[in-house]
Length: 125
Length: 107
Image (cartoon, rainbow over all chains, first blue to last red):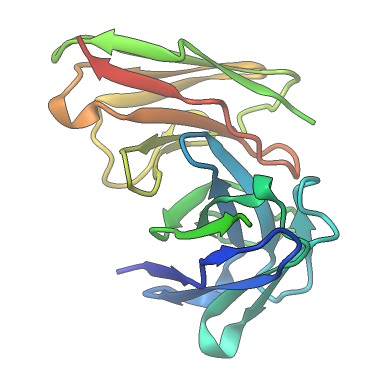
């Protein structure tokens, strides 16, 4: 059974930093691109970032580019999101999600077939 | 960036009704579209990918169609478990844009 478990969400002041983690199990982690997707309270879904299976390619939404860094440790089946220069508009539930596509190629953003339950980040003074 | 627009934003329906949700892309996305169901306090669940491919384990009453810029999600006979919010998502470009969501409510 695929499981994705996020952690690290807390209340942080504007301008602060935070590192989210996602522990994966139940599938061959280093075969798949992984993503972070967020949802502000009462709002819709926003794709945040992806990292390819080997960590060699990363992409970011314009809203977080230059402030967030995605990484992974395939030896620990873990995904991370380093969040710097946090703003109030970054307040959201952050989901870790597995890309649904398995195969070769250099395009990495597809659909998300498994999601964690999310970890809440609140940016407030 | 590609914009995704869903309609309606809210839909009131009864058990047994046929329900259709529309998603329009601001430019052609071929068939690179997914649909998700989300219930309050829960993570989204994948229903459909590549516009019309049913995810494993998803009931056959869910179906998707369309290509280019216009897509639909149809629930052939609404069940009590289907009252939720539905999102479309394009994956033709590195923005992975979601629609704003359609809430399906009990009439």
